[in-house]
Image (cartoon, rainbow, N blue to C red; front, side, top):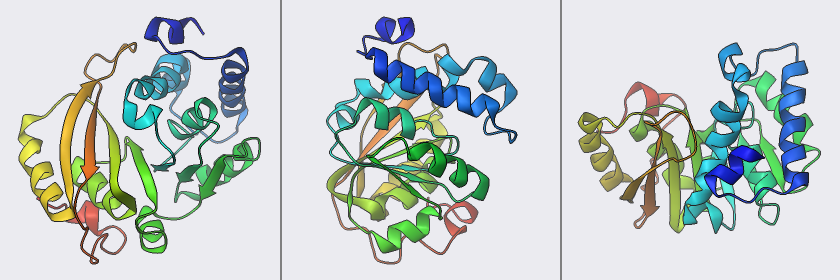
Length: 225
């Protein structure tokens, strides 16, 4: 892939073919797994955006990843293709999308699909994930509440974000203090057209209280601040 070369990311022909196959299957689906605008520019909007996270050591050196709100499979499926040696869990509560992911995941032995809410997985598999990723899942404090219980001690949350909003920083910092997370930095994404895209990276350094995550929907209804 020319774009991956421009990004400085080594993608083998078989890995590129696997990504093309996913996009081809998405386009053939009768249900809309992604917007028409996104599919018209799928290399940049989905593939390059997912690949850009491999510049982060937290992703590149991960020993396991849980992708929350996986949707059509980005970044989770792309990371599973690029990191075939590690287990990747795709978490999606919307039935039609979870069904799509389950069908596609049959081709990837390192992928597991959880057709459930992130809150349920966090209760069932607390403290099991070295890395949690989230792309277009919601406000940062919401993402943090869903991710923190899942993370192992020292594990990392990598959240895809758009334009930086200084006003949201105090809320995220306050949420981190409650959840046992510290902010280790914001990293600009390179090689994609959305120049405002960046990653917010957090590390698990303390105990997440047992009351988190709250019952389904509460993180979004009453975000920590």
